Image (cartoon, rainbow, N blue to C red; front, side):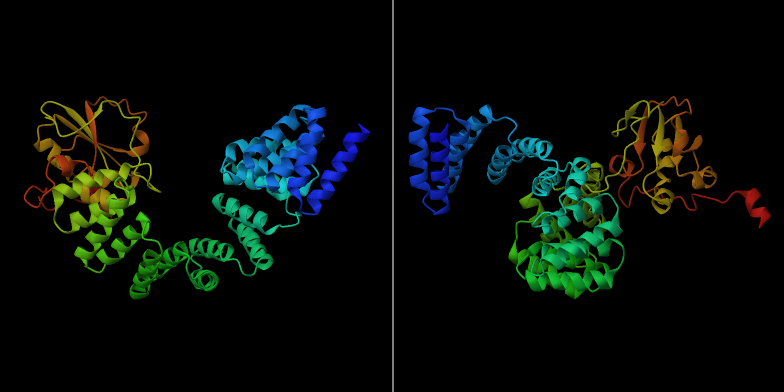
Length: 431
């Protein structure tokens, strides 16, 4: 044992003297006499890592863990190694074990929290990050904690941690860029712009910051500046479909349809199924009068890849109508979106009756029920929230913006019987 201790001390001295190869040779010679010794295996791993041989370092540290399964430092070293190789899920198990074995070690807690946050395990990451705020390098902890709190909607706490991260690393661009996004989400546009400009001064080649700043400028109606920012982002990184798509929206809003179409096509060339680009292109096609193609693409509104996909009423009985014959059938028309869209598309309930439906039920937002009862050809109008317990007996159902695709989505077939709604006579009499 004394001999092994001496060898270990000599190996550490050689490592400290930046002679890892000599240290490795010394340790390997000792391992010939004491194979599997955890102390020597641990040192062999350190030598291998210093020499740039991650495979051997992992092998030696796993061997050491067989003899010292509760050694926090070994778990810490192995976790770092795995994380550096992109094996984050494997690393997380060793971060967790190191944190369990060293609950008072703020460095371990910090790294454990950062690993959990990177894996999106926010609930587990939160206490670990808070425990690691006293680590020797707290800026990444503040930044990860700020991002996590922002996702949870705790914006005031998130802002505080972003500002602490900025103060700790005054040259970093990530914290001010993320703070700008947070402030923009609170409609604090002037402050958000200030921090975007700080971030861009620190990282002028960062395409995502230019793209996010462009979104703020577009929302403010500063169209020329927004376009310049989007184009700068694309010049720096043309591989981002969302940036092409957002530029397309900006151009379409200015009536520059051909350029907008090119932007959407560029986005879809990079990611053929990109839901935001497909839906934005659908809006452009519809606005240009290319109704049939537009309604087909408009199906993308249900895509779960969207930030806010249109929800389907999964609780309804019967099948979703796909344009087949309605002769003798009962159908429910589910009105989508807000009041304006529901008032605009409710006229398709009459169209369904004209197509042969025996019974047409309409489901809408509660405040619209009385108004929509005046629709010609409608047998029943229900608020959305009562359709679960209404004892519905229907053969099929349709989303209101499905109907134009299957039955009347062109100027020649648009239901145009006007007026198609009327205020309740009794209510009018009370005015």
